[in-house]
Image: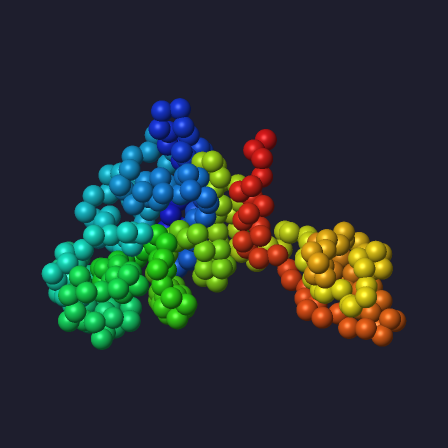
Length: 300
């Protein structure tokens, strides 16, 4: 049985359809990313799944529970890492994690969790003394200490430096390997591409795409070919290419649906002229490119 089943989910605020007939599933042990611009319906959807907001219509099942009526038995089996959370500032890190562990019948060892999130050296520090990134790690610790089957992660690496961010990614990978299901929201498309088994993109309350990142990227048929014009060469001197070159000074780029053909034509042209093409790159679209195309489309 899937960890999350959503069918025809709807939520309105007055005349605004915040969530409009959304359906998806999250498999057990999967990292699933819910993406979309501000106002797309992500937060409302996640709050309904967490049991913090009522729905107006549709069916929702999370770990076999209806979140609206699951009560304590449901909450004991999930973990939630909010984008911003308030702490008791005078607790030490260790004290606060132990306090939260006591709320769950099958909690994890608090010291192990503190070490896992990279706060071992701060275990005795007061919460008020922690930096922004350290407080975010504490958020993760409090979400993990209950030993959740399903973990909701809302913008988990906000405020992290690059090293801490990659540490968090390793942590999430480890949780997936141990069988924890993770529902992730993030504005970092490289994070979603790195971590998620599948992503769902919301726009104006509706689901506009769902699938594995590589599958969504693969649906894009164009790649981008970039290079610098050789000295003394004008854009008009370039050979005929299937894509349309765009120049900004000496920098040239073109979208191409036939990258092998255009690369062969371009390098052959350069060899015939006895010149080099500096800064030559061929890049496939990223998840961010696909995402921007999806959320910027004009609704029909």
